[in-house]
Length: 333
Image (cartoon, rainbow, N blue to C red; front, side, top):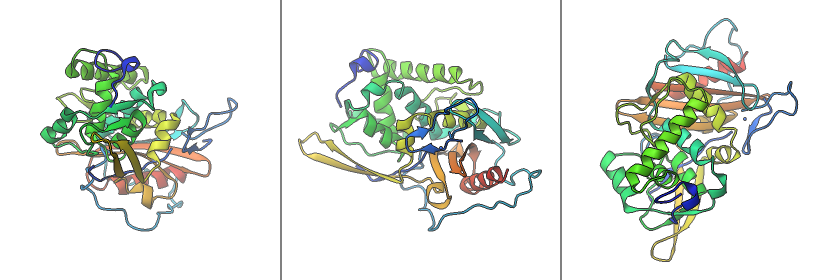
């Protein structure tokens, strides 16, 4: 990884407060990922965070869910691009409910970063390697108005820390650092293009037929899209990764990194996913928003040894209410 190769030549590399969270689970998804089924009959459980300053803090108290929904009634939600599945075991899922436009491809905003993490985690041997933050990562955030983990030029953060910085405050600077170091090529542009090709290859292997990536962070160049069905599937598969599940369970994460001046830099990242504070059993997974993309949410929750995973894309700010209704409905079945 690094300038001219994939992870085997990883660059040595590293504060604005941005916010953290998310969790993993029919053996439930735990912080260590979806439990693996012991026998064929066993079951197991399987953001772009909006900008750190973009969403209000979650209200106090947790929603316990209502279990009086009639089985024949679909969840009453506003979003059409929505999908809910029951994670039956590590690699299989069962459709519970699909919205009217669950298979329509639309812009997915920063939920793109779920796939960025999945590609990076194909190389777990590099999790503790350091990457030096380049000024161009900060320049990219400024030029695009993307969400940021406020990584400071010259700081050295590990791949594991960068995953937190990307998934929790939805740092596009962290996403660019990962794409730049896990792609092959002689230039930043070539390495990022190669990384995006890896994202599309992984999407095809997962059967995400309505998905295409032209971005490592959700800032589309014209063809960065997915479906609610595909994103729910991606979320369920991502939660199979113990590291991913560990990252997304955090409401807040603090990191220390060697700074360019030889001192220690302290980062604090918070998450804007309201479900983590308001829904009993919420496990994450990732929020997203954009002027054209609207509001998106890939989410999971675990109750009574069952894990449900869902996705809402291209919605309005009611996405958390809709996700709550979808989960309540799913757990009632």
